[in-house]
Image 1: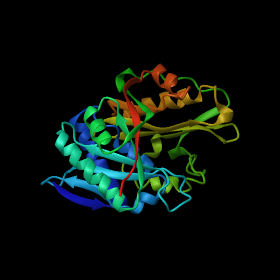
Image 2: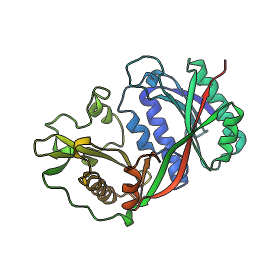
Image 3: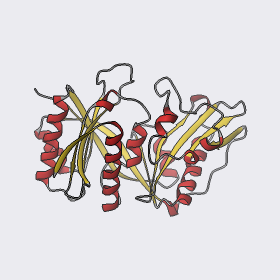
Image 4: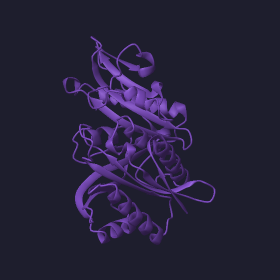
Length: 297
């Protein structure tokens, strides 16, 4: 294996390729889809300039990666809330996983990142054992990952009176519906990614063209996989079936685009997301825990 350090857009391209390779090798292995990492790109982060660690095989294909992402509010140049992502191809031997973890931890520490947390599959005994051996502790629940066979998608639910659904392709004369102080350049950043499609970027507007809710749907033609990330209904417009309409419309569009399987995740303590996703046919596949460690010098 050849180690290589990548930054910014080069890193995004390599992790996209690696995660597509993982998905093509196994229908559900791993915690991340390429589209999820591309969604993270919508916010500039202090870690964008950090060299991220990759391993490539003799054919130049990415085989593993360890990279860190700052999920702070972007107001500081320091690493506020660093999350570690560890990706290896399916079927990796324990010794190789241990090597990737050890090198990755040493690398982020060299860049002044003193603490990290990461999501770990509750069923991944190998990675959990390795992390405990490096002094990590289990903070508790992470996310529930769910999958839906696109052929089993429900019909599009009706839209509440007084609202209209649009794609971003149809609202280019308006500010992007996800633009906010934390994400001021969301559209230009999304357009830098390879998987974003404006026709799958959905928004519901009320009668005065205020944003009532939105959902971003991603289709990866390399893996025939769909991803829902993110979804939101504004507080003043909840309990009107808007999220269900956005979600069922997005699922239909993903299926028409060619998606065979569709992924979505939610926090287990969220009282709205889980019941909604299960009600349209998503089946829980895995639960993650959040592991945390302050790195030793």
